[in-house]
Image (cartoon, rainbow, N blue to C red; front, side, top):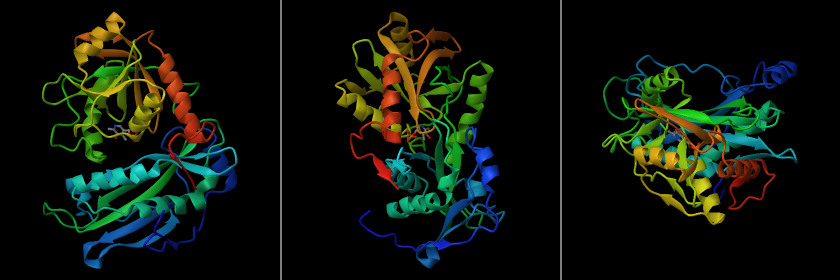
Length: 365
Ligand SMILES: *Cc1c(COP(=O)(O)O)cnc(C)c1O
């Protein structure tokens, strides 16, 4: 970072951190998103005070909110998700965190929220990791999942951008998303619901997009599937993404297709990294629209050999089967294909420091 962070972080002592033995039990098999570390970072924003102020690192605790806080009524809220990994030398590393900081601000702009200087975003992570690093799970595939978020805290019921916000960073120790390697998932094609429309908020990481995905996700589960794939809102024809993961389609000639970022798809950092890695390996990656009918006919004819979903939480996940109101088809053998497996291993290796970092992606803490 060129500039030192503009704010000093006040350290608030923790009166009663979780005892070592209890912590070790909690992180032995943490699952995803239910165990939390001792501390959190909070920054306040107040337009009348000139912006961000009162940065502090303190005990993780409940946040007092006025019942009229704007976020509770009009959902001005954004978040990010990234992981800290432990390398073999014991150091902690982040994967392209400046991209998360940048995307956080892109989301902020879309939701009429203030931007947070990128160096403050990164410094918050440094501060939290300095005190909570012992929460790193020992088991293979474990990591510390970082959840930065921001919401409108101002108490008022008018519809306009709030003048007060809170930025909060919490951390959750997580296990390998899929134990024993990546199991192929079964995907439900939602025909009743869409995730994002042109001009909407699909490219912003905002809680409302997830709230809107819960009913279609439940429909998918009721139909025996693990995840939902959303089609475009206009023609209900073009494949967009899953509720929280981007998609890649691998053809039998070695070329790869992924839907373009036209504003309705979340620009995944994993997506961007995979495009880079695939191109580096000489594959032809095309960012172009791909239709649900083409997916079915290519899978059936064998022209399409693999489909993978990607995102920070599950990294790279094979899609094995696709089910919809009037379709049901299998991709390849129905289990993880060669390119999916290779990509996953390469990306996980880069993140964990066991494979060469191709583009200065890893930031040591
Ligand atoms: C976060 C997210 C992704 C994946 O982004 P990564 O940066 O790769 O973790 C994909 N789709 C949606 C809707 C998301 O919210």
